[in-house]
Image (cartoon, rainbow, N blue to C red):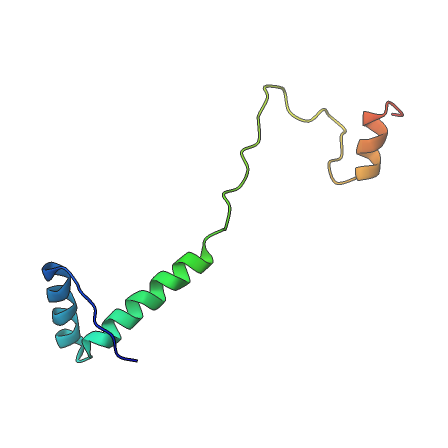
Length: 80
């Protein structure tokens, strides 16, 4: 597909130099740059991770097994 693209002079000169150094067309240099930008945007998470509040404390109590949901539930409900 053919289109017209307006670039600032310094950017146009950069693309020309890259194309000459790499023996490629200016179009291929611009295509690669756009593909790279598209890939970077796709790789970013859509939403930043939520900020969770942190409270002071002494950490997990001795003997608490964080890998056992049943044990945690028992402790929270006072059955331990």
